[in-house]
Length: 237
Image (cartoon, rainbow, N blue to C red):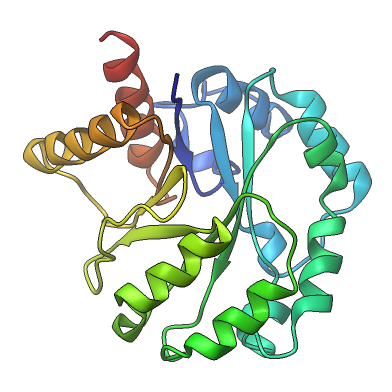
């Protein structure tokens, strides 16, 4: 059966006390507590740094079986090289994630492109040709990428379109692989919006697609609480 994974883009927020983290919980225990209530997290740390083997081992030994880490690809790939001649760098980054991958706790690697990078199908094809098969997701932040041709390139390689939702740009909810990846970036979600999101998730799960949902991390714990409510709603069905 398909699985729903829900979490936020980060966990190291003392301002989530006391509504999500207990008031007296030490920061070193945040991930352990987070993973007792949610089953995935998106790691933005890797956008600027390669995570060391020690750091990754600490992460994977802190969380339970079934927990998944999704990691944002390094900015050297997406924002500096902008995918051009970047396959070697990308493969080095992917290889650096072996501790998480070998532990069976790797969700996705997210390639988030800069908002000024317009569609270039040839560039995308060339980049993907140099990458191994795996759970890769692409977040396009310029509307020119939202075409059937681009979606076809992703499908051919089994790459997932990241459905990113914000106040500025909404990605079409198009499945290009056997999984779905949502990044919900709005500050708040009203009950009607949450219901609509649940309907979309239910449809994908019914089609046997695993669904990964990441709410925006904020100074308030609302994203984490939304993710928890989402998981609870589907577990009760």
